Length: 167
Image (cartoon, rainbow, N blue to C red):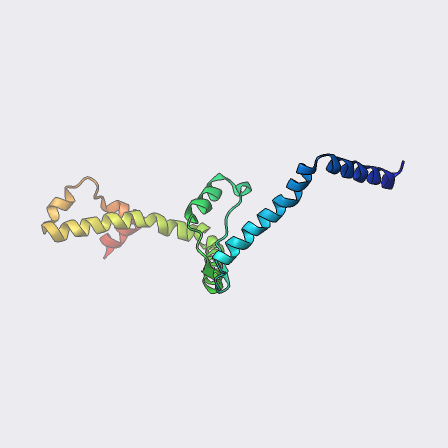
């Protein structure tokens, strides 16, 4: 018995079962018609609304990792439908931000920039000293402070000492 013969025998068995159980046949026919009528009634009760073309925010999939998945899920709970132009502007700004970071990365890894960033710490100390001077008005209170050491403000203290002594 080939494939076609098995298929015909299966159909014949189905016809015999339907003849013996008429209530099952009735249920199999009436149930889809009933569901279809419910859909028609719901559709007539709420007519469609015309909306402009819009897009939804992108969501990270679980394969991206737990934190990005939870962030995108929690941050987009309301799931607003936005105009296409707003979404494109946001994506373009993120692309330009990423490009700026990529362009600036070599500059932040070179030695002069790292030295300049380290000198910011001493600059804040100097600003605190100037602020204290402007508030107190006395130089002696600043000089007695243990954090204020003039030597720390110069890259080459010996060279600065030579300049001050010679001039």
